[in-house]
Image (cartoon, rainbow, N blue to C red; front, side):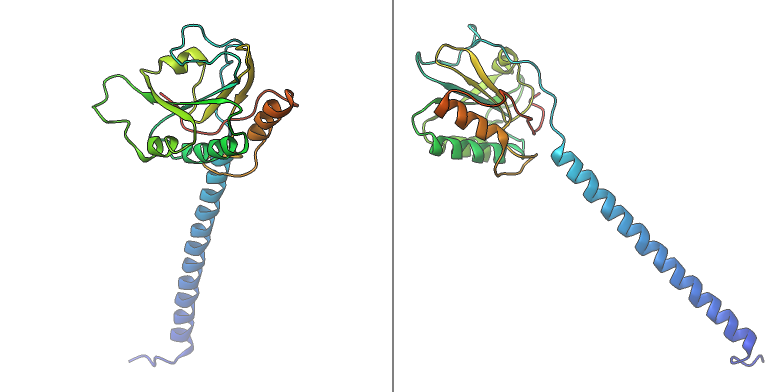
Length: 209
């Protein structure tokens, strides 16, 4: 019987140990690479704005949304199942609190054709109804979204007293995140001073249709 402590046997055991350590190092390295890649992909997703279509320069005459004369009107289109929209509604609520009675606010939730009754009854719709003064309604079949040229949940438009488009874009700093953002800042500037540096901002959210 070979002595288990001979140099040959010890060397073989050392090689096996080194191989096991190298395997574990490789597994850990692969795991870290996957984690870093996932974090990078998530950050990129959150910071990549959605595409935007040009909004009508004048309030669409065919719209069913009631526009009060001689008043600023803000319209936001939303999807009742978009998780990103929670942040948009939170920022909209802050805007309304900051600008009380300075503009009409309409939140329209898309309701695609063919969905079951009550499909749109989500916590997001309930949250929108808690915004002081906001008129919450359904956009059957995406009709209003088409008229206003909106493709993304959380996209907002501000129209002036004469029905002219003043602002078009999003009011969150990134996808699903609350906080200071240029969209809200520009709306505040337009409402309080009548001017702003730019009439648009990037929008982050899920597709409406």
